[in-house]
Length: 262
Image (cartoon, rainbow, N blue to C red; front, side, top):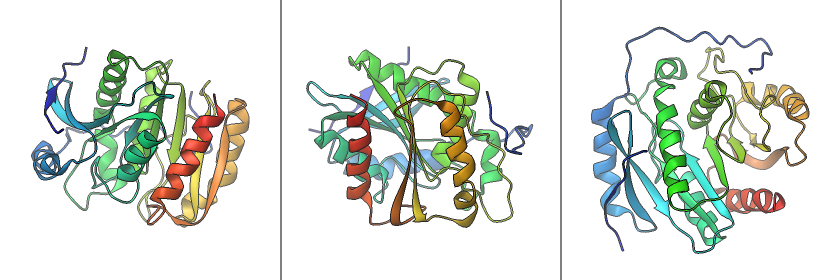
């Protein structure tokens, strides 16, 4: 059954990364976001469209509730896509629900198509309230354990939130395609994974972009600093940054890791 729900929302590592935040009046492209919602909402087959509120603005999310779930997974998509993105976030939100995990996939802030990582830096902060609204919604629906899973630009947004959230209200973090930037652009969103007190899964493909692959050893050191017994770095042979064609395999791997934390 498809229906519309309106819900009112109730440090840092270094490795040579500059944490400077550009001062800018740049805001998300809300008109483009409305067009995305208008395009995908009528076609949502698995799950319920849920409209959450962040900073006085509604934004679309897609919820699949599960009876007696293992826990809940909050999903953040990458750049220029949506909660229905078909390579990764779409398969994950459906596949993890089938495996017994409630899922909530959020529409993240967007800019004009073709915008780069550096263009997105001033709008990363707009993701904070959305993440918190998603957590609040899942808690209002009875979630006892909540894991944050983020891909690509969604991981930049998650990292920025972790870096400013203090004690985050999630029980684990899955970072997919961590550290990717556009060609010639330096990374300015510090990795929080070494300072978190929760388990972290750093999962990446063997065909990832060169610069994130170069950072694998540094990220491994951060996971060692994190020190949680559940923290793990995982290679997916053959997968690229977008995990094209690996939706089913990623669902299996994430489900396996989440299950290991029980």
